[in-house]
Length: 115
Image 1 (cartoon, rainbow, N blue to C red):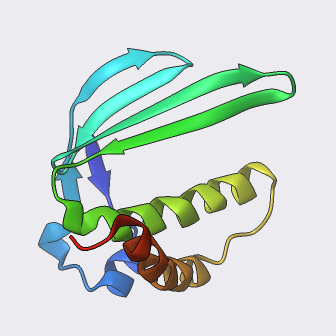
Image 2 (image 1 turned 30 degrees about the horizontal axis):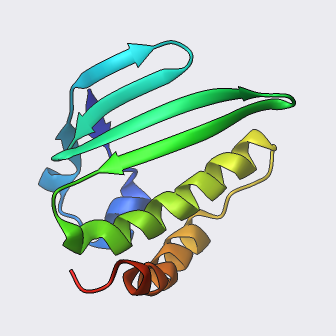
């Protein structure tokens, strides 16, 4: 799998062009219920669970470096909010999402404690 940041995300986070692309490998798949893959030394597992009125999405992010927990937690938090907005047909202000993730990172750091 190939992952590439949008140019606006790359600029916001000050990521150099050569760092923009990363690769991963699919390690489990069961359409449409499960997708699990590696990405930049992490493992991500996406699972859909049927509910009475649709489905529930479960995301599990496994990583070795505790120092990234707060930033990853905040990033996935706002990323999933953006996904929810998109599924509801609402516009997404990406710049506001980046700012919100930066602010939330401190809150997540309190949850995870020192890296």
